[in-house]
Structure formats: structure tokens, C-alpha cells
Amino acid sequence: MQQNYNKNSTAKPEKKVCYFCENKMDKIDFKDAYLLRRFMNSQGKIYPPKRHGTCAKHQRTLANAIKKARTMALVPFVVK
Image 1 (cartoon, rainbow, N blue to C red):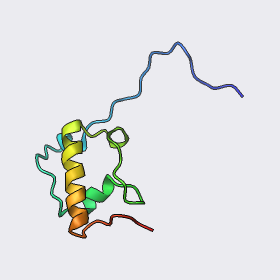
Image 2 (cartoon, one colour):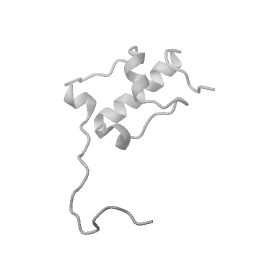
Image 3 (cartoon, rainbow, N blue to C red):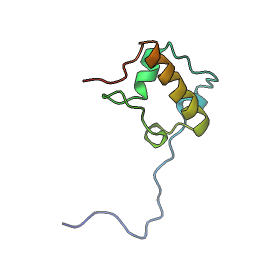
Image 4 (cartoon, rainbow, N blue to C red):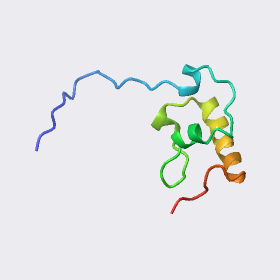
């Protein structure tokens, strides 16, 4: 089966924009469980930055907010 793409094509996929930079959010609140859940998979793991396009600065603060929310029992550690 042949693939339908041109090997010489220089087209690159669009780079994802950081959600927090786009909405000009400086702080990520650990109490906002619905926002944090967007950046976690169904097992409770934190998505890598490439998945949602978060920048390095916001990925670090997001990870800390999720970890803090886990200890406060707002977000589960593991979902079975």
C-alpha cells in the first residue's frame, strides 16, 4: 500500500500555541480542577508539552499546580 504524500514537500504542520500565553494567564490556579483535567489523560498522567503546545514556562507551573491539586485531593493521583 502506498502512502499519499510527497516526500519532497516542505510543508510543516502548524505549531501549537500555548493555551496560557494565548489567554494571557500569568498564574495557574491549582484549585481550578476543570482546567487542570484538560492537561491530564484518563489515567491521571500529565500530558507532555508537545501534546497541547504549552511553552516550557507554563508546563513547569502547570505540573506544579497539578501536583499541588493532587495532594489537596482535587485531582486524583491514579484513575482505575
